[in-house]
Amino acid sequence: MTFKELKLNKPILRAVFEKNYEQPTLVQERAIPIILSKKDTIVSAPTGTGKTAAYALPILQLLFDKQDAPKKGKKIRALVVCPTRELAVQIEENFKAYSTYTNLRTTVIFGGTSFEPQKEKLKKGIDVLVATPGRLLDLHKQDCVNLDYVETLVLDEADLMLDMGFINDVRKIERLCPTKKQILLFSATMPHKVEELASSILKMPEYIEVAPTSSTAKGIQQRLYYVPKRNKIELCLHLLRNELKGTCIIFRRTKFGVDKLEKTLLNNNYKAVGLHGDKSQSMRQEALNEFIKGTSNILIATDVAARGIDIKEVDIILNFDIPNVSETYVHRIGRTARAGATGLAISFCSADEKKYIKDIQELIRKEIQIIEEHPYPLDPKAKPVVHKKKGSKHKKGRKSVASKKKKKRWY
Ligand code: AMP
Image (tube, rainbow, N blue to C red):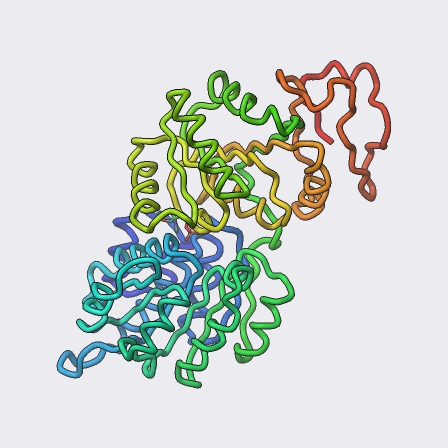
């Protein structure tokens, strides 16, 4: 299928071609016609599959087809709500790029930064507003945002918004928009609470599931290192020195962990930057820019700070800590191998984290390749845990001598 066959208008097609998109991704192919028909839609698709364009392109097309007369002034007719500032900025950039050849205007508002410039931008009149929930409600309270004309409401990364405790804000925002509107809900995973929200606010939605909620992109090679907690930094330095080449995002569970590793890597002359929620907005943006420009080739981040960030050509994802929520693993490694590219995802698992690996493997329905040969094995004598699966040929217990000799094994 081509973008032309999706019946997009010329100005939008021109912008898409300038992005060098040769053909729609699967989620775009399936979602664009439904969104153009103005139906409520739930889309469950892995990160990095082109979700943003899947809603931005048809929204712009609908707005373009039905523009207000210039003298009436611009009104917010599409509202995109998403959980993090970084994601909001990125979505705004996408809308701006796709609407280059139209006179449609997009702006973004998010917390942690001063109100005035955002108020000024809103005053000028816009067609599309991208917002994080808290700042949107604040500015609405101050009478700076009018949601009375919203025709399409997008809830992006709905699962993370709910995880971050935005459920009441999201419901409030939905009620502030007109009753008659199109709602599009995008979520990388579909936990029960997202389904509950969807069934309470969407009307007879179309449901698009591009891949199982738990799937990881095909191009990602996944590797697992069992390593004592105390040796994780050494193993990280060892791999950076000897094996890992290219751009790398390292995920840590805590802000403290991000700061500590950033310091260590800088002391070892690596160009690393840290990203977490305790850093100011300008520091976060600066860290991202440094990584995007290539001034730094290692970004160390917490999950919330990194979710949804679209950084092209990330070669390696390193899970320094194993996430205790399995879906987070899928999100993390979804930062590499985006839009069909290839990538490497490495995970460091200490003894207390083995249970999370078991859950992750069950979720992704895949056994991660264990790298046994490295300088900091968890317990040289201990056998890695083998998770017996229904129909699996592998049995619990000791491995044969022949298989012990292999450098890498699949479980
Ligand atoms: P997203 O899932 O929206 O974060 O998009 C992931 C990446 O895919 C972004 O860098 C997009 O610019 C890119 N992308 C989106 N649609 C296409 C397409 N049809 N062809 C190639 N790349 C795309």
